[in-house]
Length: 268
Image 1 (spheres, rainbow, N blue to C red):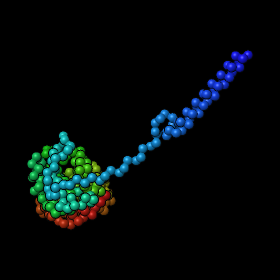
Image 2: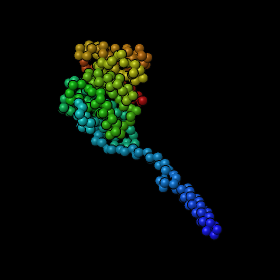
Image 3: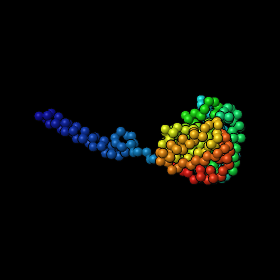
Image 4: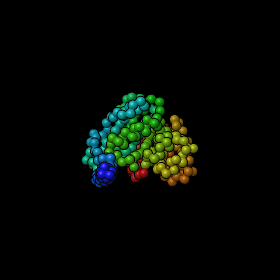
């Protein structure tokens, strides 16, 4: 009888002890954020905004090498306005200039004497003038260039402009039709686009130039694109056509201050 009572007492004592251990465990779990596994599951605070880094650049025109390898662009001319380094909080508009067939090759300095690069001194924007080393402008390679320059330079992504002459005029139409979201405005000079796909540029400010007597690239190249844009409902297209001047429609175009006044007013 006595042994039976002792056994019952020991059994009750065991139950009470186990109960206390469970309660203690629950109290300890409550003291640990996220539960009883000892791992803090409180969400991490949001990352602080990244600092806007300003890298000083050499004013004027310098030669830069493209980081991306394997394409048909190795080098490009970079033009930096005189006050670029003083305005550390200002994001500059940027113009990408595409040359013509005559400048294909590996002598980057030839680009200095052509089109926009020839007259860019004193302009209040950053200019990028790549050199096509072979064949034709490749949109995929140009996309890589676009990413690089927006990352490297203190420029405004909502004010990226594209222009080009002859082969560069073709390239301007083609790149803009491929990626209209990248540009705030385009200026194709004596080029040819794809009229059947013109409607992708309905909301794009465009100023095209061509001479009526152009025997190298027929004037229909610009006329057809302008007419197609108007049929798509665009009221943002401007077109300047002169009766003579041959293939060189760019000298007068890039010499006209009105072009830059219009261009820099455009913003995505």
